[in-house]
Image 1 (tube, rainbow, N blue to C red):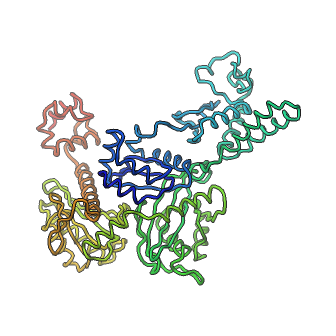
Image 2: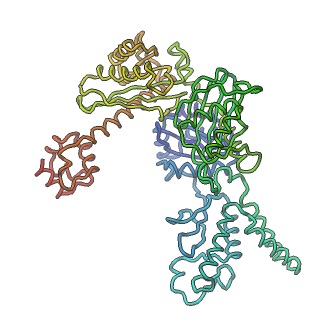
Amino acid sequence: MDTADVRERAGDLPREPGVYQFQAGDTTLYVGKAIDLRDRVRSYTDPRSARIRGMVDRADSIDFAVTDTETQALLLEANLIKRLQPRFNVRLTDDKSYPLVQLTDHAVPRIEITRDPDEGATAYGPYTNKGQVETVVKALRETYGLRGCSDHKYRNRDRPCLDYEMGICSAPCTGEIDEADYAADVTAAERFFEGETGVLADPIRRSMEAAAENENFERAANLRDKLNSVEAFHGEGEEAVASQSDERSTDVLAATVEGDTARVARLHSERGQLVDRSRHRLDAPEMDAAVDDHEGDGTTVAGGDTAVAGDPPDSPAAVLSAFLTQYYAERELPETILLAERPADPDVIDWLEAEGVDVRVPGAGREAKLVDLALKNAQRRSGRDDEVAALADRLGIARPDRIEGFDVSHAQGSDVVGSNVRFEDGSPAKADYRRKKLSERNDDYANMRELVRWRASRAVEGRDDRADPDLLLIDGGEGQLGAAQDALAEVGWDVPVIALAKDEELVITPGGPRNWPDDSEALHLLQRVRDEAHRFAVQYHQTVRDEVSTVLDEVPGVGPETRKRLLRRFGSVENVREASTEDLTDVDGVGAKTAETLQARL
C-alpha cells in the first residue's frame, strides 16, 4: 500500500477504539490497537521507521474491529497476536508490554507477575494497570501465603525464608503447610482470577473492619485502599474480551438492517478469550440473497423465509432466524450462542436447544458487553463495498458481490492443476475455494477450457453447493478468455466473464481490452482475486508434484520432507541426479553422506 492507499482506507474507519490489522492477502502482517482507529491508521502515512515502512509496503488491505474501550482493544489485540502470530508484531508493538499473572506448573505452584509465562503455567491477563496487579498479587500472598520464590531458593531449605517471617508465604518448602492445604490456597487464588472477587475482598474487608474497631486507623486506611484495588480489578471492561470461563466455545451474534442490506456480526470466544470474528451480509427484503462473509470463512448462506407474524422479513429478528439455521447447518455448533435479540422464528431456538446449545439474550454483565461489541461490528460499513460498486460501474453489469477467479498451474505439461477461488463482497471466501487436477498437457488454453467447463457443468447440473457467481475472472489474456467463453457456451452457463493479463494489467472483456488507471479501486479488486487464484493454483501444484512417488523414496536417509525440499530446489529427479555435491548439501537436511548416497543411487 502506498501513502494514498493508507490515507484513503483510514478515511473509512470510525473514530472509535478498536483493533486494526495490516494484511497481505490472507496473511496478517501486523495487529495494533487504537483509541481512535481513524487517526491511528492515518499515522501510517508517515512511517516512523524503515521496518514499519516495509510492513506498509507489503500490505494490500487494512481490516478492523471496534471495541467499547481502549482496555478491550488492548486485550483483543493480545488475543489476535497470540492466535495469528503476525511477523511485524515482534518489534513493532508499542514501547511497552502488559503484565500477566502466572501460577507455575509445580506441585507447589509459584505466583508471580510476568510478561513471558513459563511452559505449562496457568496465566491470567494481560492487565493494563501494573501497580494494581502488584497490589492484588501481594494481597493474595498475604491472605493465602502463596510462594513467590525461585525454584533455586525453594529447593533444599532447612528453615523458612524472610517471606514467611513477613507473613506473605506459608513456607511449604520446609513443611510448615502440607501440599493439600497449599493446593486449597492456590485454588482460592485461581477462583479470584476467574472473577470471584469475594475470595480476596471478603478477608480484606474483615481485617479492615477489625482494624477500625481496634482504632488502628492507619492500618484500616491501608486495607481500605487495598480493598478498592481488589474490587476494581475485574472492572474496566476487560471481561468483554478476556475472562476465564468453563464454556469451551461461545458465538455472539447481532444483526442490523440498513435499507435493503442486512449485516450479521459473529464474535467467537473460546474459554473466555475472544479469538475470532466474522461479518456477513445479505439482501434483507427478498431474504433469498447470499450472505457474504467479510472476514470469516466465507460460506454462503441463503436467507430463507423465517419471519413470523408481526416480524417483517427485513427485521433483525428475521435476519437472525435465517442466519442461525443455515450458517450452522453444516458446522459444529458452539456450546453457547449469545444473541442481541430473540430470533423471529421460535422453532430456531427449539432446534438449537434440542442440539444442546445454550441460547441466551443477555441483559447485563460481560455477555451483554460482548453482544454490544457484535452489534457495533454489524453496524460498521466496509470500504470494500465501494470497490465492488466501482467494478460494477466500470463493467456496466449488476453488482458482482460474488466473484470467482480461475488459474492453471503446471510444470511443462505435467502435474496440471486448476484453482477456483471465490471472493464475496470484496473479501476471500475460503470455505468456497475449489481445486481440480486437470489432463496432463502443455496447453494453457485447453487447460483453462477444461477447468471452466468443470465449474460450469457442476453449476448447471446442481452438483455445486455454492450460489452462482456474479462474475468470473480468468488469469490470462485474450486466449484464456476465449477458452473460458467456449466452455461457458458449450455447457450453457450464462455468467459474465473477463480476464486480467499480468504483463500490462489490462482488463480483457468480450468487447475488447480496457486499460484502467493504476489507482482504480475496481482494478485493485480484480488484482486481489487474480493473485489469490494464482497463489492457490501454485500451492496445489507444488502439493501434487511433491506427492508423486519417485526413486528418491528409495534412497536411505531421504525422508518425505527432504524429498520435498529436493524437488522444490531442483524441480525434478533428473535435476537432482545432475546436481553437484555442493548443490545437494545446500538443501536443508542433506549432509555430505546423504549427498554421496544420492549420487550413487541416482
